[in-house]
Image (cartoon, rainbow, N blue to C red; front, side, top):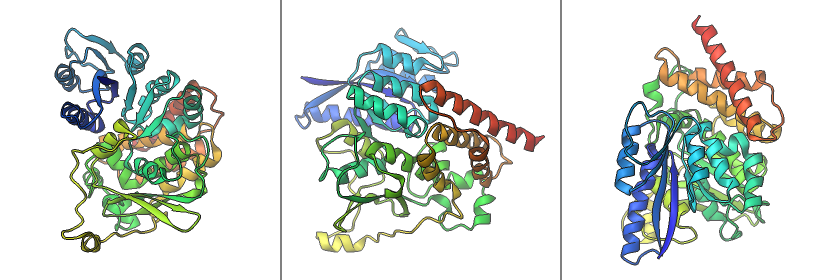
Length: 408
């Protein structure tokens, strides 16, 4: 029996919990002869949520666990690693075939890089890893043979669109031939039609009301500011070896088409799917195979294919950089390189955390802090993980100092 051993980093979060649903589905499919592999979950890691982590471990029979903040909760008699480096220890100490990297933010970088260094395939849901340290992670993946299998819906879509011209799994060593541009779609979030003043003065509750996706709070806020799309443009640059000028974003409120690839012959290929993260997770887990999914097919109407296609309106708009200025930070990071990605990512993470924590802070302050940090925190060379972590620290300190000054 073919078994794939899986470690899930960020198992108690949105992606992690859905990944366990996918594992249960694929194993049931395997039992019925519908899929060639069985998945064995050999490790689970979380930042918080020790109670849920313990429940997951018991349900899937997992003895090797990692948690940053256990908060006094007992995790049974398994092998439990505790502390900020617990996830990295789990990856280095437990043998596996695939690591799902779904720890939110730069906290997931050390463990993800460790998996790549060990030559393990990584189902990558943590875009911040490549934003902060793509110039370290990608060359390491080429050296060790580790695949970076995209879990973000947009990058999973691009990968599927490119399979007609490239059989290589990401991260690609060179740009695929014949590609004129890649377009990543964005729903536009809750402020797609809002004015600049309305966006600037928006509250936490307004920013968390995403119109199409159900996600964690941090990703939902990033979607509202289009910072999520900026991070994804940088991630696409590293996954598909494309220059910044060949990667664009388009607002697509229906969230049906997740990416479009335009080729030199003027033809375009799009990937359409229901906005459900279990689809991209399964694609990464089962590649290059396609098997029956938990996800309900995209509702395109009833009747034959022609009538169904006509019944679904697909709308695309150019993003407004004056209302969503963080989108353009992507191209600056790609141009400048070094620690610029770590700085931008850390400044945004710290600003979003403050926005989620402080009732008086308005949404527009996030963009102000990030854009000010880009100008104020020095970019240095990125030669090792320590350089990225140091840049992360300096950017966070800068944002905290600005917030403290404003409060004082």
